Image 1: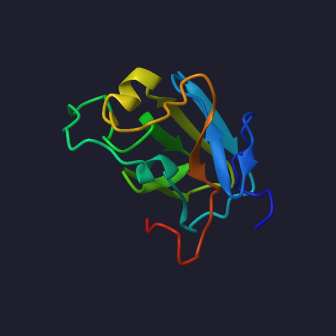
Image 2 (image 1 turned 90 degrees about the vertical axis):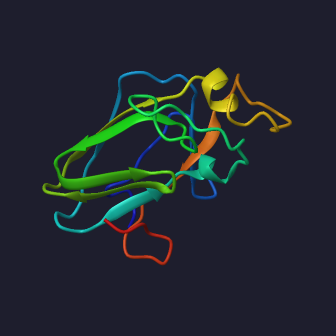
Length: 139
């Protein structure tokens, strides 16, 4: 798939996992080279971190397993955000994803058993965007 319809993070990518930071606010990422009508997705790598079974309040505070406080997309015919990740179907070759991430405190408040809380550094947050693989989410 190359660099088309892919996220490039200032924090880097290692072994297919894109790094992000806590407390990111009003962020936008522009993806180019997307194919309209094709389902793309990325998995939320933070979903794999063990969390306490405490319900997160609903509303603007996001899903309990997700690093994302909010996430949406334009230039798409549909998108979906679950604890598993984010999927979208472009309606044009350019897609803009807007997001905010939880603060370190908020994120780890639901993961009290995490031994090392990496507040001062970027964490492996999401997988690279893919399409049509066994690991892809459905749209």
